[in-house]
Image (tube, rainbow, N blue to C red; front, top):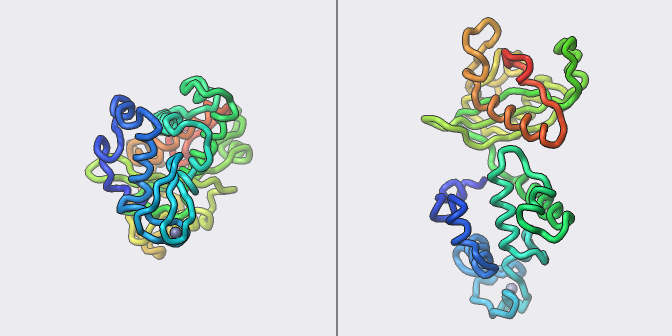
Length: 279
Ligand SMILES: [Zn+2]
C-alpha cells in the first residue's frame, strides 16, 4: 500500500460494503470511470509522451493523444489490459478475494460470479494475486512484531521439534501494530532455516530503520539495536502469559496462514515460540 493510498477512506474513495459496491460498480461504464479516476486523478497523461493535453475520445473507451497521436485506454498496461471479461466481474472478483478469510479457489470464484469457464476464473485469480505483490511497496514502520512459523510437512505425535523442522518450511512473519490497537500491514517470507542471517536480511528488506521491533527471546534477534532498531523482547519460556497474548499479531497471521493453507491441503504447525506446540 502506498503512502498516498493510506489516506483513502472507506465509503468515500471505495465501497465499504456490498450494498455500496453494487451501487458504485453497477455497469461497465461505472467501473471504467472509477479506474480513470484512479489512474489519472489530475487529468489524462499520455503514457507515451507524457502530454497532459486533453485527448481525443475514441469509441470503445479509447483515447488518442493530441501530441503523439498514440491511442491508449484506461486499462492499457494494467491487469485488466485486453481482457474480454467485463470489468464488473473483475471488480466483483477483487471484492470476493479480499473478503474471504479462508482463501479463494478458482472453482469457488467461477461459481460465485457465474463465469463461463474455470480457465477464466483461474486467470483472474492469478492476475489479482500477482498484482497484490508490489515489489516497490513501502517497508513496514512504527511498532512491528516479528516471528517465525513452521508450515507444511507431516506431523507425527512422537516427533520432536527438531524432527518436525526437517519436514517443514519456515515462514518469517512481520506485522505492524497500530496504536492504540489493531494491526497494520504484514510481510511474509519463506526461508530455508530461521537463521540469524536470514532473519536479519528479512528485517532489513521489509522494515524501515528506527522501528520498535517486538520479538521472542531468540538470539537470532540480538543485533536489532546495531541494525538501528529498538527491541522489545518477550521471553515465553516459563512465562505465565501465553505467546498469543504477548505477541498477538504474528499469531493472528500464522493462524490465518494455517487456515488458508489447510484449504489447499497443507498441514501447518505452530509458531516456534508459541507455548502451544500445535494449534
Ligand atoms: Zn502522447
